[in-house]
Length: 232
Ligand SMILES: NC(=O)c1ccc[n+]([C@@H]2O[C@H](COP(=O)([O-])OP(=O)(O)OC[C@H]3O[C@@H](n4cnc5c(N)ncnc54)[C@H](OP(=O)(O)O)[C@@H]3O)[C@@H](O)[C@H]2O)c1
Image (cartoon, rainbow, N blue to C red; front, side, top):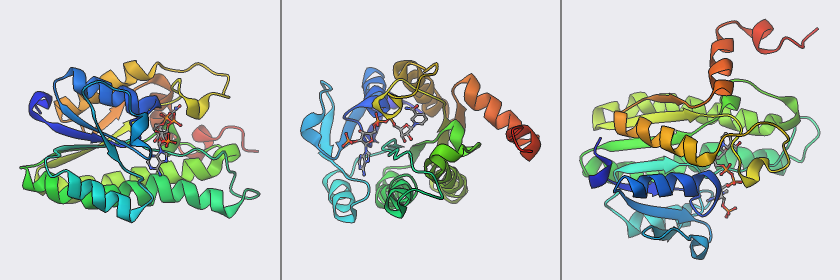
């Protein structure tokens, strides 16, 4: 699709990967709404800050009401509580699902009518290699990213005949606040944003952006013994 004539909304665009995505879309000539819980934190020249908390139905409705011209929706906003599934507070586990799953879905439901009314477009959900493989230390995040992958697949089918291409981006560690404490190789979010926006422009349904995600995707076919070789 021609991004230079598109209007994009990016959730969580005030920092991290969302900011990199918004900057990349701006560089392609798109009009960009930078969604943020605190829009005064948006520091991208040319972007249009807009208040948007994806776990607050009133905030989502207000953002949809305030726009009308969106053709590209990028669901980037995400939480990472580090909650495991057995011992962590259930409120943290709910937050992961409320953000990645219910939040993303709520934003799609609010903005799909205007994308359809504008002749169709694209939705990109920022998923993870952890949509495909889980680690117990942050099992709640992995479960939420798997749920978000599943909704991406269903919505892709449901929205195809409305001219909306629904894509999922799978990526491993990127150098943002979310994984500041992780000591492992990380991609530059700017590089991944370029790959993601190339994918939107090309009409891709699935964007697998790094080796870690490609390995997770390949391991799926091998079943549990390949995905989880540490099992006794
Ligand atoms: N970093 C990685 O290694 C990695 C890898 C794979 C996938 N991802 C995914 O990439 C996306 C972006 O993550 P990131 O690495 O950029 O994380 P980050 O640096 O922690 O940024 C998270 C962003 O999401 C926003 N956010 C959180 N909850 C929100 C809500 N309820 N409503 C609106 N905005 C909300 C935050 O806003 P505030 O500033 O208001 O908190 C912030 O802008 C997430 O979906 C994450 O799961 C990240």
